[in-house]
Length: 270
Image (cartoon, rainbow, N blue to C red; front, side):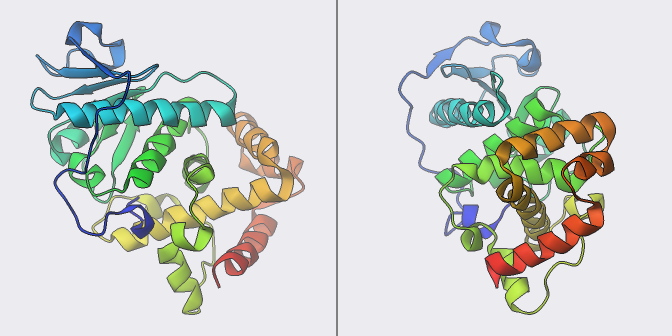
């Protein structure tokens, strides 16, 4: 999900991390179950609600910064979903270790992944993000953990997570969706909502970014059309009864949503 708007001007091994107020380093014995038994001698930082655990060589300032950002992300998710959030974040030493912890083959193009109740940072990619980008990514992944994804089309759960992630980010739509905007202005708007294959890890980060942007704008359209509460209810209804019935309760079908979303994308980005 490395959209250009979220990246630093130049890749770096580590961004400028400052120790946040209130983040306290603690021994690994204080870890929640989701983070235990991974690294002997793990380094740990606590926020107000968040717990961040890193490999033994993890940078302490990075862990403290992540604890503060995870607290912020948790508050943003809680505001939308109406339930308390206690973020657990893991910081492995490499992308390969991140993939192993998440139980996936690769994490190309991803800055973090959600798995088994925790957010796993992909350190090489996460370090390339702007401060706003880090907040968006953590909020996105926490949304997956809290809202769940079971039984939903990929465009809905990825788009909803980006909706929550970008909601308070302060980025204009053409900036946050720069890759998709370029395609729209070139006369190549999306034809259909992105399917699962569009979100597969890939070296083509621009293509991956466009897929997330397409899904985000579908959920943003739904929220603007009927209100944020309706979007949240539609998400929950889709989990219980399927997306077709959930859309029908909002006066839509996949076909009518697709047509209205395509028009919305053109209005926002042309």
